[in-house]
Image (cartoon, rainbow, N blue to C red):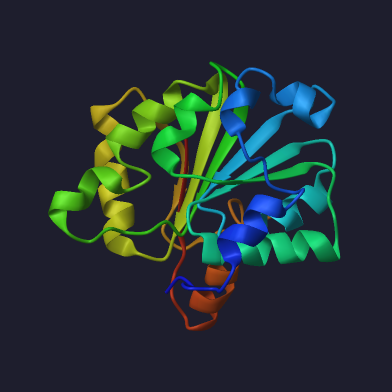
Length: 212
């Protein structure tokens, strides 16, 4: 369950030097924002930021952008950045639907979807981040050789995500229904807070990597 109602979180986000306040102005200019031409990886639904920041430490040669729509969750990521600033990380508070408005065509090299909200009601299916609707949005700004990595502990959401792929131009590069017992796909795996919690309970972690 996501954190909510953290007093003053919106104000703190608005004042944070780690958050891009007007990301639309960076469309087509993210290389200028980072001051280099390194690859750009985006995590949509970054939560408290553990995965994003661990990846940024491991790969200083890659620029990372974390997107989170809940202020009360993003504030935790900001606190982590205040403790250990990372020059190759930028944070955004925004809705995932707006991503084509802030990235130019082929501006992003990789997208991570980690433990996304399953939106269990059928009428909310198109709000799910691995839905064909969102896959169409990602197609607008992901590089031609870019990939999407999706992880979840929710079997229903994973089945849904797999069923969406044939309705799009995307193809499966790799897939597992038990990540932590898959020697190939688990190599170099960086866990999120949710992943550590769910796997410690014995829940299998599902993952796919898709391309087009």
